[in-house]
Length: 279
Image (tube, rainbow, N blue to C red):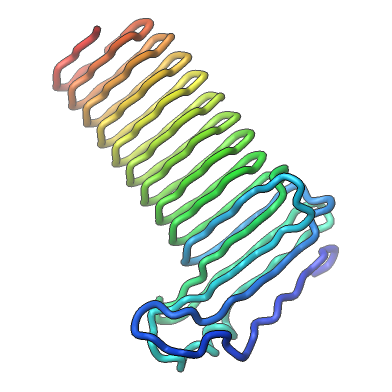
């Protein structure tokens, strides 16, 4: 690759685990490392499998651990799958590191669980196909997640998430949060900046936001607490419970009850059906 520093990772032809058992079976374990000096961003692209990315202060390299797992009890297809597997970790001369892990088999019975440790000062960009995600401790985050639950914790700056299906838990964000969510419940705790949520289906719980909040919601109940700013809600259906808001709560509501308590002001612009209770 012209202009890039490349770390070549050789896939072993001899499997570390050869015993075959009826359920999940470890096919092999792979490792990679890349010096972090001069890096500004980390771009992670993974296919099926669980993903954990942890930012740590003081690290001088990015390390990757990959566990290839299958549901096949037979070892007959292992070598072909490993030969076709993508595993690349490299850096460009522009301060960009990239990790690509993908197990592409014809049966959908193989996947790769990936664990990454990287310097906390990096900006993180993640694209994930399927599996649970656990991300913590980076300067900023952009996440495009198709399917699976995700937990996000301790991002110093802005967070932007495009999520398909699965539950989300987002906490301790030092910047703004922009979330476009398809299906699944969402919990949000402790965000310093502006929060914008565009939610399809699922319950939404939010607490301790220190700026304005805007929510466009399709279906699901909503529970908001301790918002230091204004709250604007455009809701399709589901109950809304808003408490301890310093600013104005403005609601355009379709179906469901509304309860507001200890808010600066309440404006119900349109209410389709359901009771309104303001204390």
